Image (tube, rainbow, N blue to C red):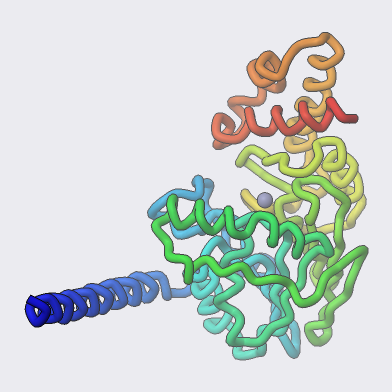
Length: 319
Ligand SMILES: [Zn+2]
């Protein structure tokens, strides 16, 4: 009996090993299937942008929904946002390598959201400095595990594809980095889209990367402060940018006019929830009516608008 059991156990171990082997091969095939370089466009000399499609973070998209890219100087490369999984980060690295052999010295994360950060792990072999807002480490610590579990469930990715990389340098006000004849100015903003938004300005071409401080076409997500975001939009509008790379949507060349639709939306939400609170209406009533006229103007409106009104309502109640 004992011998039979140990025989069974051995057989089981063999089967388990075989299954693990098959899973390993499948995972390898899956990661190789995504290993082709990400499509990027050179929007200005040395400035490359991958435009994330307007989709939700759901299978089979492996976290490729945000605009991400890189800037190439005479000595080094800076990657700006990394995509929503190691696979997307790896494909972005292939896109860098298809254009230059220069070292990737910096990986800049514009904020905590999963579609921007989880690709960072793919760049670690290059030993870059990972840079983010001074409040990014705390935000990653608070939310990273939750994001990973959600993305494992929704995207069918493994924990190994979703490693949280904490910045080794942080920005409290501004910071300059030099890529060789090319300075990038990194600016840490007060709470707006999130409480850890960082923008990047390439002085050589006057290209402003806003991260998710600018949404175009896809409805903005208010995860920080509607009131704060309106102020930050004024700061951004004052920057003399020849072109702007938003977190989502097409690159803009009409700056600051390109801010107008987002400013209109956030203003309607900001003012609408306050009017409801003054009229002693409740959150449900606000969710139904505040800025509902914007419905036709934005993609994924139904997915995020109620959440935006809720966040702004709670913020306004404490205001
Ligand atoms: Zn975001």
